[in-house]
Every structure is written in C-alpha cells, then in structure tokens.
Image (cartoon, rainbow, N blue to C red):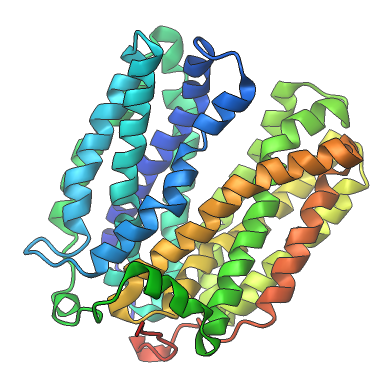
Length: 407
C-alpha cells in the first residue's frame, strides 16, 4: 500500500492557500483595524473571530458534512461554494473605506472559511487509507508551512507596492486551486452509502464523554493542553525577546522563524516516523522534547541559544501536530470523520482562545521572565493525558480497528 502523492499534493495545495490566506490576514488586518480602533484589546478580540468560529460554526459544519451526500460528494459541495465566497470577501478587505465595511468583509471572509475549512480537512481521511494518514498529514502540513513562508517572503512584500496586492494575488489563487481539487479528488462512493445514524450534534459531542470513549476525550484534552502552551508562547515571545533577552521586535520575530522553518522541514519525516513507530509513541516523544526545550529556554538569556532550541522545538511540534489529527480521526468510523474533525477544531481553536490571555494573565501576576515555565505546565499535562490514551493507531489493511460510532 502506497500513498497517492499526486492526490495528496493536490489536497495540500488547498491547505497551502488556506495557510497563505490566514498569514496575510493576520499580518495586515490588525493594521487596518488600528486605523479606526484605539483599543488593543478590541483589536485582539476581533482577531480571534476565526477561533470563535472554530469552536462554534466549524464543528457543526463538519458534523453536517458527514450527513451530506450529492453527486459531488459530501465534502466537496462545501468547498466549491464557500471557498470562492471567502476569496471574494478576502480580496475586498483592503478596499474598505469605513470601519463597518472592514468589519463586514472580514466577518464575511471568516464565516465563509468556517463553512469549508473543516470539510476540506476531513477530505484527508476520506481519501487516504488509515495506515497512511500520518504520512498524508505530514505532506499536507508541509504544504501549509510552505504557504506561510510564501506569504511572508513573497506575498507580503507586495504590500509595499500597493496594500491590496497581497489580498488580490492570494484571493485569485483560490479559484484555480478549488478547480484542481474538484477535478483531481473524487470522494469514495461507499462513504455515501453508509451514512451515520441520525442524531443531534449535541448528542454527538456528548458521546465522547461516555466511559467507553474516554480515550477520545483524553486525546482531545491533550490537544487542548499543548495548543494552550504553544499559542501562549507564540503570542508573547516577541515581547519576551524585548523584555528578557534584550533584543528588538524584529529579532524576536526572526527567532520564531527558526521554529517555523524546523517544523516545515520535519513535517513529512514526522508522518513517516509515526508510520514506523506508532502515533502515540511519536507524539509522546515530541511532548518530552518540547518539555525539555521549554525548560531549557527558561534558564537561558541568549537569543542565539533560544534559536537553537527553537530548531528542536519545531521538530517536536511536527512530531506532535502532524500525528494528532490522524490519531483523532482513527478513533472515528469512516462515516463520522467530519464530526471528529469538528471536535478536533473545537479543542484546538478553544485553546487558541484560552492560551494567549491565560499566559498574559500569568505574565502579569508573576513576571515576564517565566514565559517558558508557563508553557511547561500545560505540556506536562498533555503528556500525562497521552499516557492514558489507547487506540488511534493505524491498522494494517485500512480497517477501522478502533473506530467509534456515535449512538
């Protein structure tokens, strides 16, 4: 059994464009908001719109996509309709003349992204045999990381020529990529013949709290914990670099690039490592490495040493992040991959909402110099939770040996 690299690469193009879009959005939309809004807290709240949608709209859409079947498939209709709408709103964002126009276009883009993002993610387990999902996740994560690099090094400089150009170029890329997805990816017909039993979304969510499915809940709580740690460090590291390491904002941002580059280079190998040694063991190894990196970084005051540590952190994050989603959907039946994708987004997006303010609160209480120690605690919690997780490994032959169906 071999991974279909052409089909996986095509799906990866979709994730590259999504990553490119969010990177441009996060880089420039706060600048647009600050022309009208003085409060940094308000701007920050507006910039969490995508995460709020991630814990509300996206899980529901993912759940509904499991119960959708048309001649185009169950995921593709959401992508074909919502992705072009998101692109149009994205292109219009820099053309605002009032705050209300900016809010309208930004919210429209966020809502449209919320309607197709989770179904697009759920396409990976739909079209990939279970034993190969970690490898496919590695390729897709690599493409997503590549999209972020393209955004920062190619698309972002276009802003100097004209503020709307990064948005225009990125938005226009969506259309050929969606066409390629429609042409190259055909959803398996058997998935439409075995739809999950009808139940409410609330009952579907409650089911993971059932004692027989506690291993799923432990894994999702671990996902929440390590994203709390990571998003907290990511949000406050530039300030940490200024206040504690004695450097400037540009140097702090450059240092974060070491982590991003290491993750990009190690994303594909991380999937193959999990295929060889198992997902749980690979994730736990990544957590131990991340724990060691954060503990070591807390003890040093040299930006050069932190950069070296971030190279290891990027490798660790690849071992964790590349394999966590395949492990979650491995615990679902094929008919419920979308619902479990929604649950994954619920916990990871919830952590992105909780992580930065929690880290900021600890920073206010105990000081700026303990940033990495604040991250040690949730990583340790994630490691403890992962020790309780059973299942989620790839089963030879592609059968759902640990599948869980909602009742």
